[in-house]
Image (cartoon, rainbow, N blue to C red):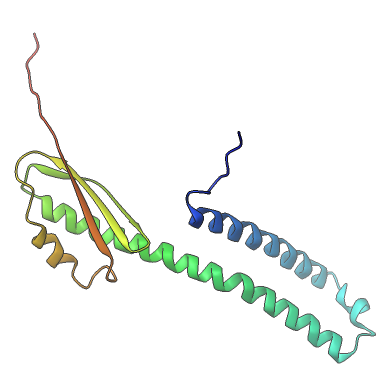
Length: 157
């Protein structure tokens, strides 16, 4: 039985396709640039009409736009998620400071930030971290998972 990579996570499949197409066009554009430096366009375009030249330029600009727009949107999402994770990490560390809980992980994706804390005792008041993050994470929802832990200490001889 085969495994379809990314079938359960369409954003991974889109990211993979975007990477492939970006690399494909980067190789083509770099090759075209090198051929241009070597003087190959002059013989090819010497008999070309202005319409053919305009079509070539339009095609290149269109291909760049087809790559630049999705790549820009994907980059924007990665940058936003990284910024959100950083802000939530700092807020969560401050939120759990002085309690029996400590931060395990922070993960941002789509419209939700998942925070995992582990420890003992009473869970800190969620209003504290909520007020710290208000207006800081682009309206994303925060889901905190608190994992109770048991601490066992013993001496050895």
